[in-house]
Image 1 (spheres, rainbow, N blue to C red):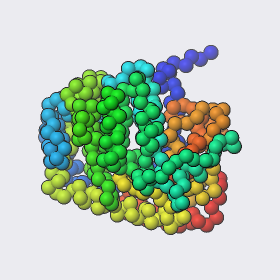
Image 2 (image 1 turned 90 degrees about the vertical axis):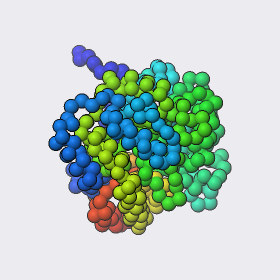
Image 3 (image 1 turned 45 degrees about the vertical axis):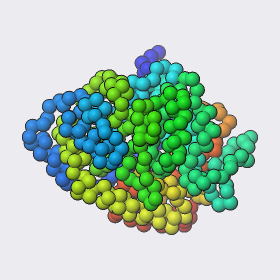
Image 4 (image 1 turned 30 degrees about the horizontal axis):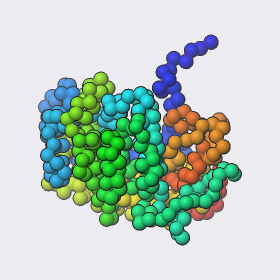
Length: 454
């Protein structure tokens, strides 16, 4: 009899839908708009700085806190943005990507049994981070924009036969974009709440939290003495009238916020994994205590190049150019999806767009994305993967099946169902070359012809 030697804290983590869709895209030669990273090169001047650092023999371990020059460049960027004077010695830590910063912060700041508030849909690493630290996630739903005649998209989402079809939702001005219900958020706080994970601009919805929403979150965190881990890796990717505001800049929030960022996202060099966290000395010390035993340090020459990037980006006009290029990609993909009969939801920030697939003839977003990848040749991600999922046998939701049989499983290990009340959407990434998006457009032009359930 074999023994399961896997620790309980990771035993429930199964193969994700992301791996399945990526494999399906390779198998069928699909244009992959599911993967959340660029298919184009980062700036030559930043790559040249890395090559120069390697040639200059900056190839040994750096200080585990991060190269002083990079920490100083991060502090200077905060100063230039008018946010705050930051001490690079005690309030900035360089990590192996933003993912490590978030993981380390969660491990450092909660004890087993502590509760962590997570907005759903959520970046997929958040819940495993909490689970591995012994914490308990508490979910607050982000609601999609209102459709015509004041209806919520949730009201048209798949439901079980015994589920209620009515909604007590009352429209309000923020309903034109993704939004949370303040009463629902307030109810999520308890005496056990220690952290709130905030992602703005938001993956996967493209939402940018407004100053009014941030003030509501801040007031509750101050009242309940809760720390915020603010994932702001898409800070430079905002569109239209949206503006990014770090929650750490609100009154009373600096002392209770760790702000996480990524040069990989900003400079289209995601494989470099140069992330960082900014926050008050006590929270920074806690993160560093965990960080030293997770990765200890991050690539020296790539840190050196990241410092050059931050030092020179504004003077080179890089940030404005970045936003303009991404806005062009966003507009192209939105037009393509709408032309294919897939209406898009508002995109305020990040490099993702959500498309409404409720009229496509599928009972689950995973089935739609499999069909789109296999039969149309364009890969997208089903957003139900970014929600908590009911356990097997639960009466709510539509069961999701693996094409080769058996239940598809969430990273939390439970059989997937399309969750009750979750709208039917598909997430597309526009961090792609224009030619990649145009290739997808050619294939998506066939979507309206002969579409049917798989």
